[in-house]
Image: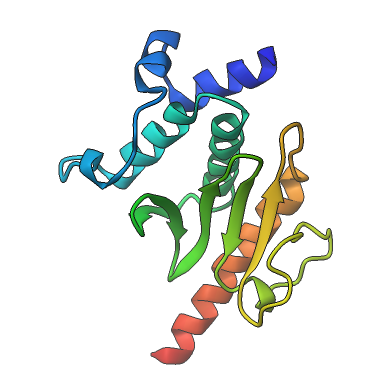
Length: 160
């Protein structure tokens, strides 16, 4: 639990007081300010969760940035963190018992490490459900992000 708290505070780049002030805050449309960047909104969502889901989403966000320093963060669909590079790479949704990372073109990606464990039946998307106490292999996850970036880049090149 202390490890999760330390990761959570590092990810939120704030003191426990900052984390507590954001916890329980409703991140609905009424709270979205035009003055806030998507990155700020994602940071607030992570802090607002205040538990293992926030720490997990924060760690996965960090791994996405490590895998692709050129990634763009956006805030779509009424409060969903989205990471893009030449198109959507993945979204980060949080549920009561899982953090879900949905890869927009996941069905077209190779997954030799078996990270995809949800939304397996569709022809386009694939997802990774992460439950409390679990984290996917970090090197395999970074490789999956890099593959998604290459896939999106190749699709963009074909269109031009």
